[in-house]
Image (tube, rainbow, N blue to C red):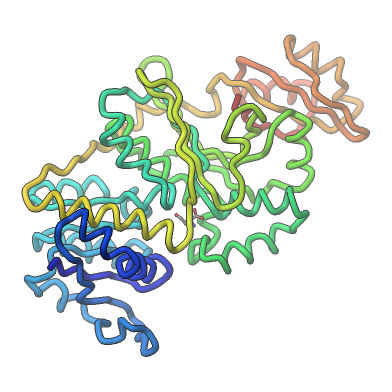
Length: 406
Ligand code: HSE
């Protein structure tokens, strides 16, 4: 029997216990053994739960119990979660986690400690909820360089954008429902402002490019400025508004990494990803484009990913090799504002901004639609800074620019 401890009995932690109970036969077939939740660490008691007798409030009980080989960290937050993870690894216990904040901030250190101690630090549930993207990148795509990643990596914002578009829900209503469904972070600002997606793209970029890019260096914009008008205009540009996290290798081995609302063309499969679903499109050296799709948040999908790590750690046993990465040199990043790409630009009509003037300025721009109050055009091979400079030169200040993901 393998004894484990769950740290944090919230949405994901209780989901881990539920999936373990529901799938004990299947898991037993995988590992040829049984898994027992010996402890649950939480500040609260759960007198109604069937796990009430396993609840402890002191981490040292878990740390000092030699029967505990694996700790499942589903607490959230960074400070305490990092501290407990480090202490567990140093004590020779493997740790599996859904905590993207800890992986993005301290993953290198924790992977190094796990490697040194001959245990595992696994984090499948930190990106894409239930989608097995991390194991796929580490194993199935091992022979491919990854040239680029475009992903919808936050279930809450995708849920909000979908329900604003399809049911005319207000931003606040859609967010409240996402919280009720257990998708949102404790502080949903992390979802709405793009920080959560940012952490996740940093983790995927570390796997793809071998270096963890500090979150503070990533150009990150959330969906708080997206309105119903923005969503309707995206349709007129021929796509849907999605919060896209992307990391791409540019010329000279530089990496462009960003999180921003983008117009995703309708013939790109990412445009049809709705509700709490996430999807990750990888551009791989030999395989070409491949997309993984599934539930990106929620109790059971995320717990399913945590269980996949528990199974891997138990099967691997002690002494298996832990992968790790470097910390990125800031010089490897390209300036997102100067990256040449295709953009959708909306300009309110004014004396300064007529379609003719804009066409004269941008040369090959294609006007996609005109409405009473403004017009939209798509322009290729240009940077955001150049678009801004062009429009400022004719005294147009009030415009919006979205990357067009073809
Ligand atoms: N708040 C996150 C999301 C949870 O909405 O995607 C899963 O990481």
